[in-house]
Length: 64
Image (cartoon, rainbow, N blue to C red; front, side):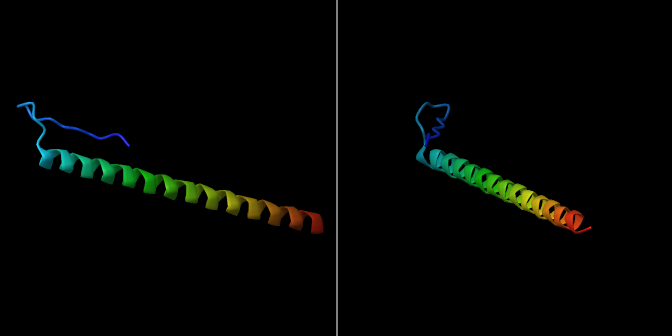
């Protein structure tokens, strides 16, 4: 994982700022990951629902 280094105008990185930026970057990554997982889950649920609906219609059509 890339380390984000933010240097102050003076040129020397202040450990507090760097830590803060790292924490925010991690939060952002975590949120993005969670969102991606959620999106994928929703997509999977949608496809499963679609498949079940299609199979139900298919069996019903065969019965008629």
